[in-house]
Image 1 (cartoon, rainbow, N blue to C red):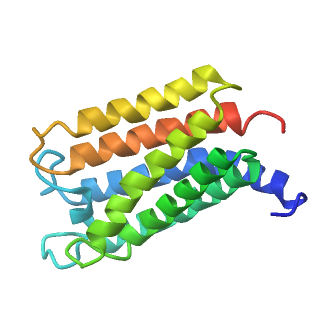
Image 2: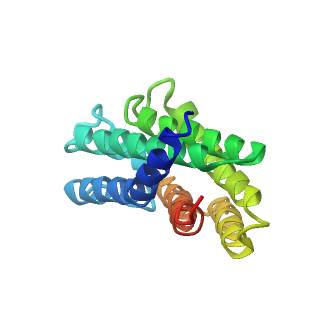
Length: 195
């Protein structure tokens, strides 16, 4: 990446990092409101975007929201990549980029299609792993932020893996919230500093 483009990408990431999760939550929240049959305890979030379900209202709205938020998160990941100086930081930001692309693909490969589970799994694996690597790459510069990200991601993995959930929506939201918190920490502590 050219040295002239790096500061611009970091500025874009500072803006889009915090916005990406908020866009996703807005579309998810509106979709839940439009579909009173949906319950967090008994469904997966992707069911809100399944046009094969006759009772699902406005599934395209949910899917477009994931596509848009994935693109926004990809811009954030490119800014992380532009800012990264170490190999572990570049690997982490690349994984966040691939996770962001996977988020967009969840809105394309809908629930029940052959590629839905692989792209959903990719988002929920690649993004947290990438964020953990980003935290590890910064542990000497910013111990508090790095440890905050590590604890957030690991605690959400432990909590979401408890097999008491009947549907996937609660573990999905736990994972998404931990990803969001980690992104906001990175925006404030890592992207907010001068290069």
